Image (cartoon, rainbow, N blue to C red; front, top):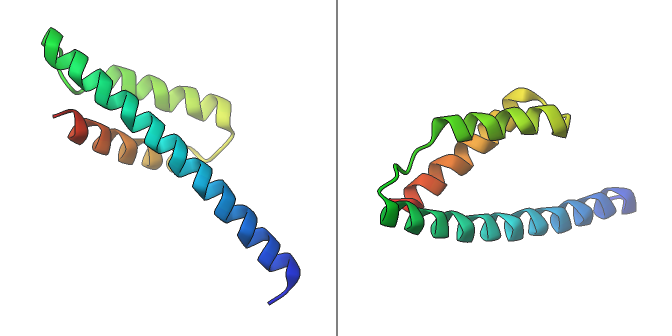
Length: 84
């Protein structure tokens, strides 16, 4: 394989590590939020908040709307599962 291909793959691997580190941090926060919701009797699901996060990302990230929505929906699914 070419050096250029290897270099790009290594960069992607480093980016992926950062993505998963950030997801780990995010899930720690959603765990804390879940505990607060349990104490205060709030529902786990907040569709308005989810939609706002998606809209903000679409506006600010300059990625395809379908990609952002799919990624966020997966994150929301696992966050809610963790909070229950």
